[in-house]
Structures are given as structure tokens and as C-alpha cells.
Length: 374
Image (cartoon, rainbow, N blue to C red; front, side):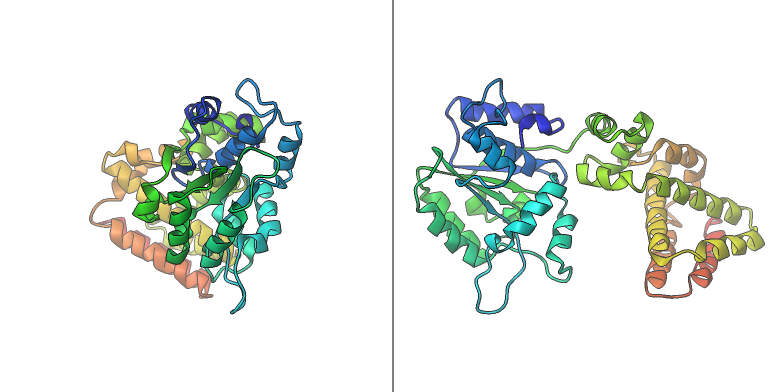
């Protein structure tokens, strides 16, 4: 991973390069910011830049032995540490146990979509953590001298998921660092870190992507129409992972908007017969798309309420959604927004629990008729 492979963040890249070029690298660096801002990609790019034997013009060369080893996740002086799930009782739980899964995940999700990591672990009922065994293993490995480079580098993803015992071991490593060791950590929720650890790292803020940068990258790298890219960037709210996930559902969102619009117009006109037909047609679909449709409806209720409150800075809508909200938002007000939200949430949960979707949707439609009059 090189800096040029990462969209935006020019100021952060320049700062990281300067730390290396001017010999001011701290022994512990924390890249902090919202999820989906390419922090771990920046950390990887920094590690490769540090190890590169022929860096120039602010970039790792990409062809020296160190760069090739970084590209294959096999650099001998680079250690990956990340949250994993607990192994069988009595056995240590280490990041290295899941290194193959992790490198596969990072290759497929270079911007570190946490849901993608949960999918790799194939255990959705257990939240990953960095266990105490990891702290002991890091201490052991870092006690050895760097082999091929000036520095050993620990790339730690989501240090806020360290167990308390792990964090205490990490604190000792940060307080008494090995001279040839650098820690580069990336955190989505830095305030969850122990204050003693947080105070011992040099922090670099990585802000959310602005809509223009994200839209431009989506259009250039993914071949998306510029207007569609702009719409996706708005809804993604600066999260590159969310933007990529939305690419595959852009057409779904258009269909969801059409169905939501139809529901509200028929309900306003009190066309019960047509609402029944609407519920029968929509209810014949599969449950998973129906629950996503109702999630979409919940978002639209929220956005239209914000529009009615004249808070455009809080709105996250595509151009089509904004056009619809221009006339519709006045119907979602402080008297009915909570009952609306509850009705759609109940319908979503009922359908997810295998209730008859046609009956649930028709009941919802009748409820909408009543609530639009509040």
C-alpha cells in the first residue's frame, strides 16, 4: 500500500511523510477518526514508506524487496495485531492464529469494513477482542532485534478492543519502548482507550471524507456516473466502506423510494383498495429485501422530519430524495414522527420474525393513512 493508492487526506499524508523525512518519528503513533476513513491503509502506507530502501518524491518505490514484502504481507519486521475471537479454553488467543484470514480480509477490504472482518471470522455472535495473550506475545517478539530494517513496526488495528489486561501490558511497552520498535495504531473510537495509553501516543486526526473527494474517487475508480457517485457520497456520510456497499444497492434505493412515495401518496389520498394492492405486491417479495425497504423508510422519515424542521445541515439525501422531500416533508412533524417511526420499526421486526408480510404491510398502510392526518 502506497500513499498514492489512498484517496484524499493530502494533509495527513504530508504530515506522515514529514515525520519520516525529518527524523521525528514517535515510538507510538495513533491515527484516529471515524470508521471508513482509510486509517489502516494510511498506517500500512506509512510502514511501507519507513521500510522502503528507495523512497522518493514522497512515495515508497513499490519495487524494492521491502515494498514487495509489504505488498504480500510478509515483511519480517512488520507485526499485525488486531481483534480476534477467543480460541478453545486453555489455548492462547493470538492475532497470528488468524493472520491468513486477516490478510485475505485486508486484500478484499483495504478500507477495513468491520462487518467484512466479522464475516471472515464466521462467528457473528462473538465480538472480537485483543486478548491478554497478545500482549505477552508482542513483548516476546519485540524483544528480538529488527532483522532487515532499522525498525520493527507493529500495525495495530482497533486498539480500543484490547482487554484491560492486554492494555496494561501494552502500557508497559509504551512506557519502556524498545529502541528499534514503532507502534502505528488506528482507532475508530479512541476515547475507549485507557487514558494512560492515549496520553502516551502521538495522535493524528483523520477526518471523514468530504462528499466531493469521495464522489470523485467513486466515479474515477469504480466507473460510476458522476451524479450517482454524488448521491452515494451524500448518503455514505464520508465513510468509504459505506459508499462501496451502496454501489450495489443504488438501484434498490431508487425502487425503495418509488415504493415509499407510492405508499405515502396513496395513504394521503385514502385509496384503501390501491393500498391493499400495494401491500400484496410488495409483500410477495423475499423477507430480506423487505426489511431493507423498511430500514430505508425509517431513514426517509428521519430525513423528512429534519427537512420539516428546516435543518438542511442535518439532512443526508440524494437529489431524488430531496425532490420528493420538498413537498412531502411538511407531513412529518413533531406530533407524528415518533408514532410513524414506531409503526415502521414494528413492521420491520414483525417481517424479520416471519410474520405474514402482506398482512403486516397492509396494516402499516392503514396506520399511515391515520397518521398523515395528525
